[in-house]
Length: 310
Image 1: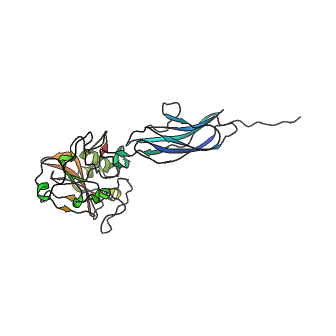
Image 2: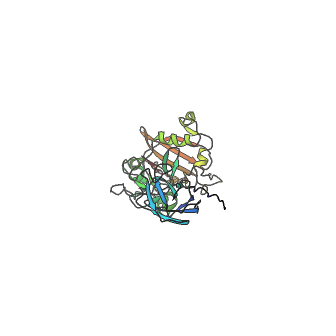
């Protein structure tokens, strides 16, 4: 008589691959079934959604990709721009379904000019990780431009410009907008808006600034500015670590007093939607500072914009 013991079938081993080819509406992701654990693989695939740890049973989007072991790839389509997604590979045998670890990615954001932007989650909010560069309002309409220094200084209506008057600075710095343009409800892509002063405070506190510091004026915090600044492009060894992913670049500004361009390579200025009449609140990062300055500025000045998701 020969005796033998059969091994129990257990759920298969599967891993989720890296996400690639990310656009505003699509991405590519793979999986790998590395072990059957005693049972034939009857189904494998990818599931994804905007909630953590998506499954095939919770209403998440799903792509079934055959059976068997080995690697497989899915094209994720019809995604929403500027959105955080969670994706997992899965595999099924007679013992059940197993999942790979969730991989998180953000789709790109598209503006009215078809410019694409990286986005980053800081705290609970999604922020643009690049300066806005649109020349059109969302939904239509050109933003006025082409003003000489005297005309710029006299404006009380919306306008934008490129630093130094050169579109060659678009890719690096984005555009500079006066507050009249920045505060237009259609300046940001659909579902996004110009941040309030309070939303910038939330960003800073997510990076470790205390509430008391965040409520202060002038230069505040410890290393929050360093964490927000890009790793290159800042003068006099003023580069940051960009550990936040905000990737602030020193785009300088256009002065409201006479209209000259100043401080490229040294300072970044960002509008908020919050008025401090007759001025408006801004944030400022500098090559010589580790913190973040909170102050008000003349609405005629040209400064950078970072949109935040609604």
